Length: 117
Ligand code: AMP
Ligand code: ZN
Image (cartoon, rainbow, N blue to C red; front, side):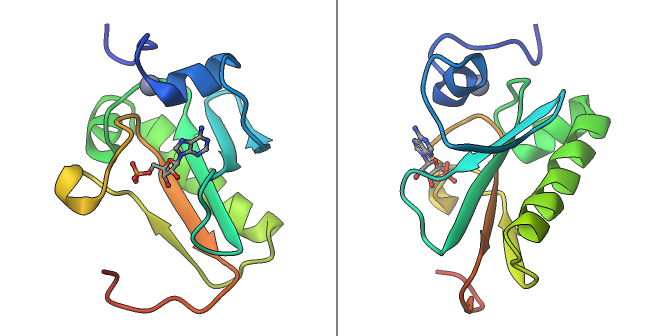
C-alpha cells in the first residue's frame, strides 16, 4: 500500500530505529537527522515517516505530510541558527538522488553558491 515501510529502504530502517541516526527533531509524521556525509556545517535530512520515493509523489499522495516536511525543514534551520539556508530535494539519479525515500536536505552554516553543481 502507498506509504508503507519498505524492507529494502535505508530511511524506513532509520524510522523504525533499526539503523542508528543522530536525530535532531521528530514529529508524529517526520524525522530529522544529521547527514552521515555532511556537505556544510548544518546538513540535516528531514524525512516523512511514510515511504514515498520522492517529493512529488509524497505531495500528490499526502499533501499535509509534505507540508510537515517543509515546516520541519524550516524548524531545523531555526534550531541550527542557519538563517540563510538551502532546502533541496534531489529527484532522480541524474540529480544525485541515491536514497529513494523522500528527504529534504537542509544545508546551512556557510555561504552557498548558485547555481549548484
Ligand atoms: P540523496 O543523494 O539526495 O539521495 O541523499 C541521500 C543522503 O543520505 C546523502 O547525503 C547521504 O550522505 C545520506 N545518508 C546515507 N546513509 C545515511 C545514514 N545512514 N545516515 C544519515 N545519512 C545518510
Ligand atoms: Zn523508505
